[in-house]
Length: 486
Image (cartoon, rainbow, N blue to C red; front, side, top):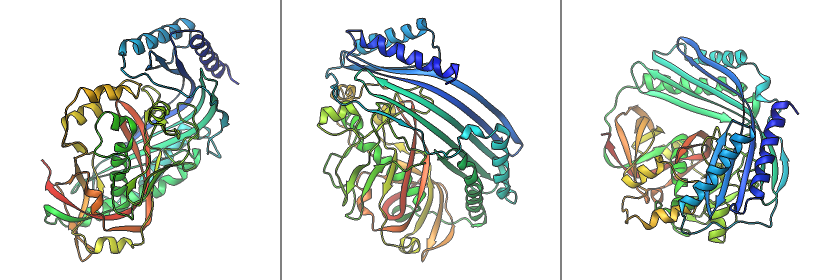
């Protein structure tokens, strides 16, 4: 073990001992993190802002008076650690949470997981990573573009997690991702994200990613403008657009979202047709995959929807104890560890149907390839989702008691970023300037799910925490209002 790694482990052990001997602390988790990171931006003018560096730090989540506070610091000297510990304890006490959290003090997890990478991502040099991006972008050389923008980022992460109830877990994760934007001179911007935890093998996937993005941009550029229908419309969603929609819906199945009164759904509710079943799982090598979560809990599959009805919610240990449920490893750490872990899905898996992709489009008037970020109709929901929130999940109940009923909860406008008008299932020109008007009942209008699926990945923000997500979904056909974007 190198000196930098030893410093991280020593700092983590010091904090754990500090919390174990403090009567004000009911429970604490401490993580030590060693990262080898790369970040690069490549544009139509070539590489820029390329950097590779090492970061070490510790994070801590401390429960005092039943409420939690979260901290992350890269200063590992004892004076700095003591300052962070004191601040965390005071913050939990000052929060004055009405209902204290309960914890499983009996179950201790001890494990080592070395990730899914055959070759670590940090084994490849920065120049070679940038060259792989540039080589992949050659697929777009024939396009008439205003701008190309690509952000490549990766991290080889070694993490040690300990809790005051005796759990100790060591994990290794090689996480890499790329975000690509192809800004057409005469047309919309094609944006794609891809990521994995397979290590250096991810670089081999870049040519296919950029090739598909260029092909989609080429199809949009070649398509003539078409009239955009509005009002109640039969819409076909690509697996990418459907994945975005299912990821949006999964937020309403998070226990803290329900505690806060921001979900239109409850356990047992019908959310879609009998053909809809969905689980949150962990695919080895997936962008959202983790063997253990921030609470040192093993990541296990969770069946969220069966035959169109909600069967389980997403929990962390505190909400699971409060609801007499079982935590399945859904306390997802934020990318970079700068913000608290949040209850979140890891890799949503939506079961396929039996329709062909062509059959899904046959009865539809519009085919949506990709949505933009949704705009929430309810102001309270907009503010809460984007605002800072304590690391204590049960504090959400205190928020709910102070708010009124919100009839627009769960409703949003989805900007349509890439789409086509359909004529007998065939593309008859691109449409722009539309938004899909989503309400909680929309999924119940689904009339077809394709047998073929694909995976969409991305980064989601929840209360300032940046979280990875992945969804494997089929193409779907549904009925929803379309409107002109404001």
